[in-house]
Image 1 (tube, rainbow, N blue to C red):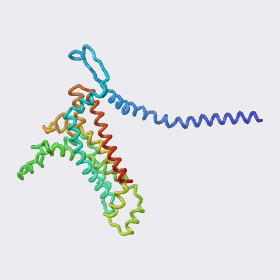
Image 2: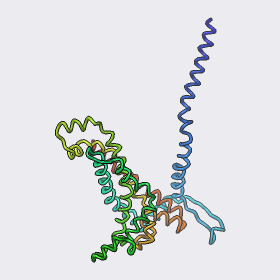
Image 3: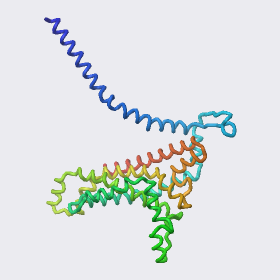
Length: 312
């Protein structure tokens, strides 16, 4: 009897061990496709880019027919990228762009979100969809659409201004950056608005009822309840916008066809693209790409530290 009990108990323990092992493996099995794609499409390109940024490729012969040699270049590619005045100027240009455009966009998105979530808002679903719709338009198409309002001879705005004796040049050296900012703001205000609205919907209704009982009006509710509680959404959208600012590419590339003020190195991404595919210097382009990522990381990190310090 004792032997039988021992055998049964051992068999039950074995089944229990197998079951617990299967339970532990199940999440990894389910995550395996995602992890594989993540490694191949995200991690591997980053590793390759960093490796290329520390490599120098030398081609012998006119077209490299005599052989190609690769060697470790240390920080020579980074030094060459930083020594490029046009690349450094492009970073300064997008930083100025972000200092002006990002706050304007976040404020506009916040105001729209507060208005659509107010008690007196009519047809909020319709207006949410309307404001979000520009985000569904690809950047290239959006830039082409806006170019019809920027290009003299096509733009009714320029024609009306000229008829009134006002000279308007949306594509001039001093204004084209803000024309691009207008396109980016038009595209992403609705996207950021939805993130903020999602945070607003998470606010308990009891807080609104208590505030109204205490005599708080819409402005006081927005200032004392809604704005403090949607701070995480504002931080998130601002970080996304900072990163997106350094990724400007499609809008200036399309407008370059109409504006002589936009050169092939107008933004950091355009500069890296030109270095790689116009100058065939992929290693320096990789170094530029890494520098862009580092700048985006530093700006995001500094912003998060400042907001966390204020929050504490």
